[in-house]
Length: 302
Image 1 (cartoon, rainbow, N blue to C red):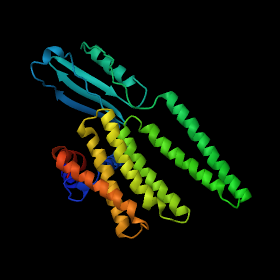
Image 2 (image 1 turned 90 degrees about the vertical axis):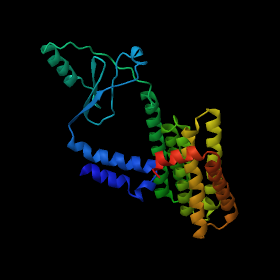
Image 3 (image 1 turned 120 degrees about the vertical axis):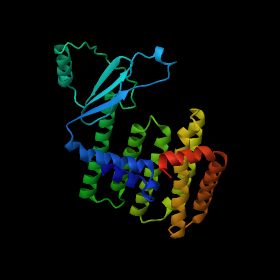
Image 4 (image 1 turned 45 degrees about the vertical axis):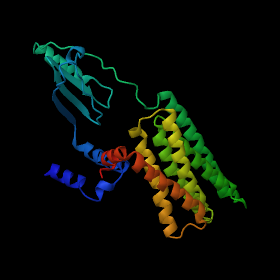
């Protein structure tokens, strides 16, 4: 019943249109909620079968998973049975007892230290610098708010300074944590950057500069930046295409909605920005149609 419910959600005609990033957030929230009902996990990956021509070059297989609880994964290749322990806690008590029981049963075993590729996670030193930077930003914002409360300057420079520091911290935080994937970084900067500009525009009396100029200019600039990044780093088409489609769709749909709702006061820049994004999507469909279809099926499930 549980599997059929999941399939029904996956095949839902509306939910299938949800972007992959949104689906990932929902999956993470569901996994977080279900953590409290699980104490340990055992995964049997069964026997690994591979083409005979590769067998002489492979010694063994090991499976490791990212899990919030203690997990034991099992798989076998030829005559070797492999156990892999993963845990978020720095402890080897269960693992040590497991091998002790094997030894008591007369079962020979060998403990092999895994060699994982370098992760994209910030190092301890990098996180320390980031935390110091965040503390200084919080201190400046707090000092500006206290100054505003006590002196009430005629020109609200204290609030502008506090807002500028918060904006800088958000933008730099995205750049820090997403720096290993420049394409995703650019997409996040576009999304968060335009939202911040909308907020600034609203808090300063709404002169519509955020929707008249910032949104279309940032959308087109992000598309151009993604193209340059992809060419310089020689990324495969499938690696950068989905991000460019998302940026072009964002730069086309949102300005289009704002134009129809007559939120935009000076439509010239918005219309040209939306036109560029539209032509980009048309070019993708015409010249990269197969890759476009595959990315839509894989990432957006449409």
